[in-house]
Image (cartoon, rainbow, N blue to C red; front, top):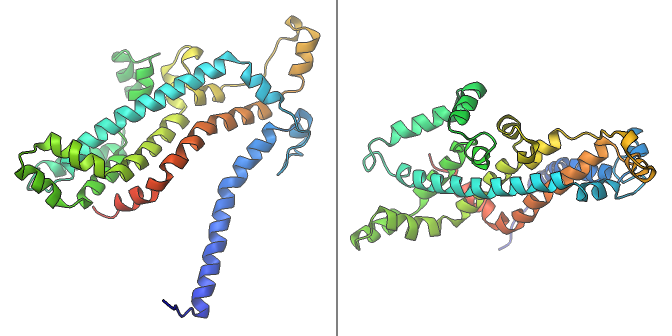
Length: 294
């Protein structure tokens, strides 16, 4: 097929490419800067000499992190939280999305439930009532408090509802004629066909659980129960030199809070960056098919 490209369309394409490059740089440059800071010397970081390349290249910050048991304990707490939270969220979202994807004739109370969910998405009871509720259920200093404290993400639920609406109704009708019930339709038809939106919502949920830090501060009274992001938030380099030997003092003097925190942020990004390539092929499909129908 021969396409007649006008000058206006070529200019439009060039502008689009420039905008996309700028957007990509806005995402990549901050990450690259953090990596450079984590690999730079204390003096260079304090003097503000680090820009787009490490100055005084060293691995002292990463060596310090690998020697901290608290960091890996928090890392493990975050992994448990992300896995459990994603599993619980996906279970609740799929169970809620299936009936809410029906018409008002099939599910007369559908509109009431949708309005309640949207209202809860826009408004909440506040931090104090939320904390009192969590404490009343005994979820303080518990991994389940960190999991259930996030609640149900209504935006992800709406994506799943709209995706289910786009599936051909004839598939479910044929299954019902063959004697399948709602559970069979959900597990044998809807969920297998919903892999794109499931992968998309799972990615959103993993990132949400992984990056959240405030609930870890509120619901954890012991530092050993901190998720990784909460642990990173309260990090400082603070040592008592009177209890250290010469070798330890020399090592500490090579570190500062900024480079140490940058190294921890880099390590904290690795799990999400490792998961994304496996879900990326479903990402665009899940977003587009789950967003085009009300």
